[in-house]
Image 1 (cartoon, rainbow, N blue to C red):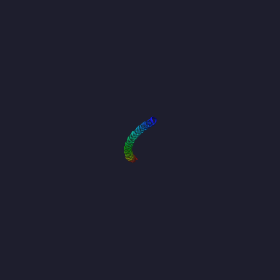
Image 2 (tube, rainbow, N blue to C red):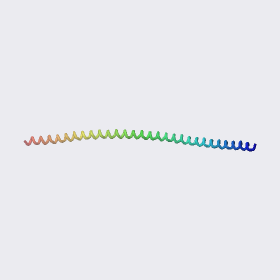
Image 3 (cartoon, rainbow, N blue to C red):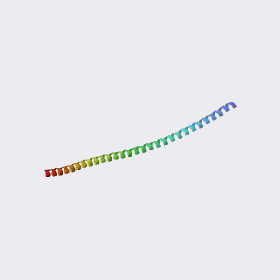
Image 4 (cartoon, rainbow, N blue to C red):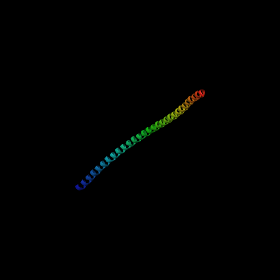
Amino acid sequence: MLNKKFLIISNWIINLVLIIFLCYLTLSAREKYNEQVDLNILLKNQIEDISKINQIQNQINAHSLKTDFDNLILCLLISIYGGISLTHFINKKLSKKNEILEENE
């Protein structure tokens, strides 16, 4: 009889220890899950921030490319104007020299 009571009590103690251990594992798993959720939220926010940064960089690059293209067109126009002016100046000088040569002949 005493032996049977001892077995029942020891069985209850083992069950109680197992229940406490399972509660600990459940709480630990819940805590890890919450940490993972928090990390996922942080990661999502960082990805959104990186996406915004990339968007701004793309806008800056597009503006820079447009500015470079505008500068290229401006340089081309200045070169054409310079070439036309130089040609006009040379033609004017040559025509003066031709006039002087014709007068001397």
